Amino acid sequence: MIQVEGIFSGGSSISAPIIGEDFNWTGSDGTYQVLDDGGGNWRIKFLSSGTFTPLKNMVIDVFLVGGGGGAGSSYCGEGGAGYTTTVRSVVLTANTAYSIVVGAAGTNGNPSSAGGETTAFTASAAGGKNTSNGTSSSKRPGGAGGSGGAGYVSPVATTTGGTDGGDGTSSATTGGKGQGTTTREFGEADGTLYASGGGRNLTATVPNSGNGGLFSMTHPIHPADGIVVIRQHKEVAA
Image 1 (tube, rainbow, N blue to C red):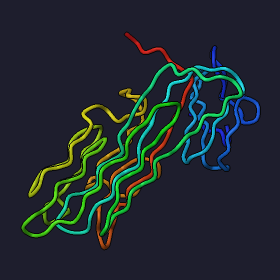
Image 2: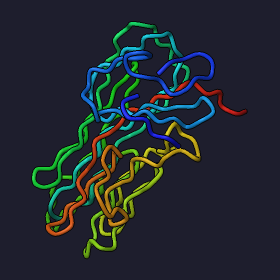
Image 3: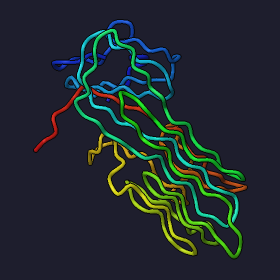
């Protein structure tokens, strides 16, 4: 797979699109990536909000991930990942401006916050839910999301969040509820995995993954912003 810096078009099989020739983008450099997957297949990843204007008519597939939810700081589970949405056969009209809003990550701590909603091409994906602080006698569950955040347990090193649409691990409290469907790109088995719930299965904050957060004084995993990915429309195998 070749990544082309700064690079769209629709219809028959084409090479990766070029900014200023096939599309315009109001976001700054580095806020989008064009990927040439070979064989006339390509994707564009939008890493922040902006306005996308195709310069040719096109038919695309769209994949959206909401922002990851944050985790509270005591007696609570971890943050839920952003929800995901796939929409196929979206018709875009040349020289029409389409707003893209990438959901912002929530925050860990007290107070924590939920992830933001991602919207593009009339589709949307909600942000992951955050968890608020509990008490020793009233502990809180993990946050719901695309994949659920881990439930509360001590020590926290044993908790794991859900992946690929699954629920978070339950212990002293239940894990957060996942969406129950894959969170892989375009809902396909070989797609890149997004939206894992907060928990010790995560080892680092992954930008634009929509992952949920894990609160820690020493090794925090911060929730991540969402993403919008488009590609030239592909027919789904029967």
